[in-house]
Length: 580
Figure 1 (cartoon, rainbow, N blue to C red):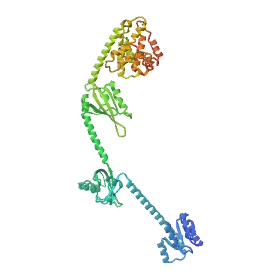
Figure 2: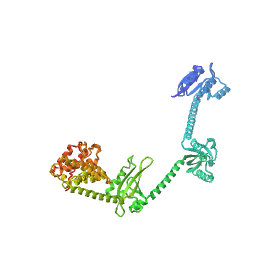
Figure 3: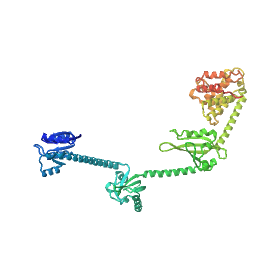
Figure 4: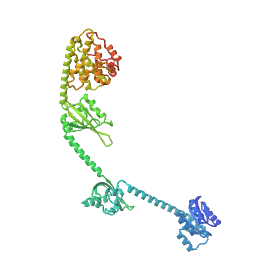
């Protein structure tokens, strides 16, 4: 049984039952409602969905024409069949003109079912056509919306190259109103003198069906715009030409930036090549990508001999860690540049010193691209500095010898203190440069004793108060001797403070805590340990364990805690011993 929703407009209940029986006999399962007035029919149409309307023509309060008028007023598309007992031909024609789909005489109900089936099919066809038309309208609206709101310019041309349509982005890009564009030859928007070239390109486009190129268009105010144009030919269902479809992308800014980048690259290339300092480009693995003329000459290689090698190939083995550390930190977000000194190996094998400043170049997303390293040959300077250091070291040793000549009982004391300060400073992780300065100060820390009478220095018995006060002037005397010498380190100040104590109980200034240089705190501990562990005219050696108990017992009070810890570790864990 096929369900069928049938609205029966009939004043006769018997006639309505006959219609229902006919539907059931034809295999339908009808859901029906009988109405006989305009109000009842209106309510039924508005409240329920129907598949068909079967309507009598003449009723006491209502007619078929009235029903058709109501259907039209409500704008409802339903199959409408007149089922009447008596109706003339002229009347039947009028009902068909009014919108009825068929008319059936009640004495010929055998025609009813075929008419219903036909009208149901045609109604389904109309509904599908209406749905398709609505979808087409909606799709056209969506397409037009996308077309108009697209960020890229769109245009359509006819077979003669005249503008059929453009979107808003196209108009905004060139500064025109739509009515100023539609129908005009596209050549009007090209710079003068481009007619022949456009004709040739358009003919090739029409032949190939697709084309991509960059061209220059003129805005309404005459300003040129570089556009990338991607076009395709549109054909109808028979394969005949309809119009061209082109997407236009304004690439003026992109091309301007590319030009600036090229100019910047050229400036960099010239600066790189003509620099009077060695320069090289490195990747993240330390591979040498490119060197300039100065770098090639400094290293003694031809460019093709050095480019492609790695830093390991040209770096002194002892400096590899320093040389490669900046590469390992390349991914650190804060890393931009580093400066350090290292030794290079010349092609002929001799050693070169270079001062390197390496900068990291990143891409637009901040990812590392490559390093630019500036390498200044400082070999002569390093050799000169080394000579000065040796001369300075010899001078310091000469000064130390003077002190030991004045005080033979403490001969070797300054050297042993210097060895211990260097060990403690290394254990604490001080920089090499500071360790060297501390060592120099330690070697001559008792230089002020040359101002103390020799008989006091070598007295085998306990000193009187006056004699001890004379001994206590030697830090200040040493400072006075050295303060005018321009050491690269605060040697005079270190020596001045080497008998101070962390709690302010030392001499000569009574300084404490942070007022004391870190180097002075190290020298204080080393001086105490060596003095207690060594023989003196007035007493024998107390031994290293007694010295360590002394500094450990006053850790954080008289002596810097970190220095004491490093000194104790040095003797008890690292096996530090003085050389004879």
